Image (tube, rainbow, N blue to C red; front, side, top):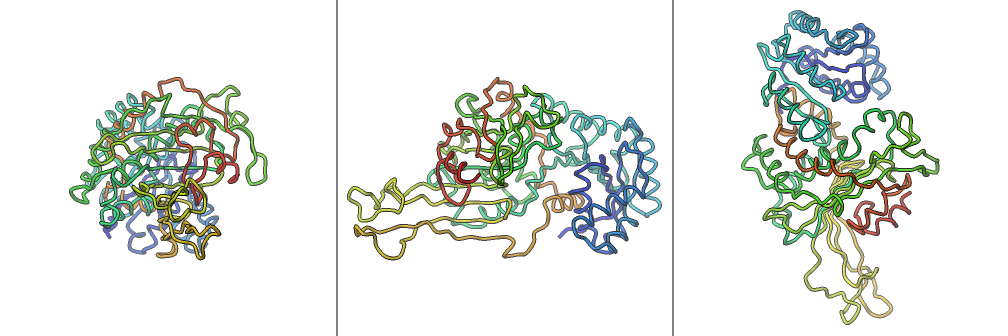
Length: 504
């Protein structure tokens, strides 16, 4: 494991929710080693007129709420956390520069700096130019800037943002973060594929029938309506999270485990994806009032700060085709939405059925337990959340015989759980923050990757598509059935609507 260098970790937007829920706990974990804690300092920065002590108390509260011991939390916050107000307009970068240099002198740091933008996307450019204007983009050590998604609003805005960033930072200084890529199962996709000849030899159009990628959220828009209603689910989830998963599933073996070799292959996948037909290959939806967990929940238009006539999509499903030698003819189905029955992030790889079925009802020697007169195809389920792991489904003969003498089949599965095998896994943010600090960009999105993704989805976003209503607590609108009548996502394959009904 790479050594953590002495450094100053600056968080823009330090008074926000992401800092409290994810960044402070992740940094606390990373600095549990006494030697690391002595050499690493966190500086929060925001418009709020806070002091060092108020920032520390907010961090203490957040860590205590997550169950960390009060004594060690107090000591870490007192020694490692500081705060700098950027002024009511958020533009006092000269004051920030002076505080950065003062802390580095006081703590004998070497000029290594991370600048993390936990900010609204609308002020990324202001922050980039502010750092460049006062010379904080360079130092006697290394300087790295971390940008949360979304990176741009469409292809044109992403290109303009990349141009602004590159005016002040080289590409190898820029870490575009997607927390899905920090999950152990996502990282293990490469090890699973390229370290196991059994699966890699079957990872192609000759053996795979289709791939489904599902990211389901039971929560509604919550307090994010101001941002979300201007964005929608395609921008918020499909363009980044689901597309990253697609590229990792479909990529070719890289020449090495070098970061750029891996990212080169991901970009090739995105360039090979055909433009979806917005009206034939895409279904959008918006949740209406319904019942979840036995409790009524409001519809999207009833949420605070959402316009009563909003047509912003909270659900998106689409069929994509990767036009290359490995995947030609294999559809990739993407599905994601809010107010779905349960939290689930899963990649389902359905393999081809046997070319000749011995289990036909009209003359074959045996019959599976539930019709269509053939054995169910094998499936590999890669689950990212809530329980990270893998499941491989296969058919076996059930004990005994049917009354008609046929052979009863039953689907069983081999399962691997990260929790069971290794205990608790690190939070995705902890993994990604460590990679930023040690300078490993493998799990971060490169400029050309961002632009390739926006190039794929911008035509769709510019098309006026119908947004179908779906009841909260179901698996989306009926329009999804025209893309794929059956989805693999709750432990068995069944119709989209039946699954939605039973899962709610």
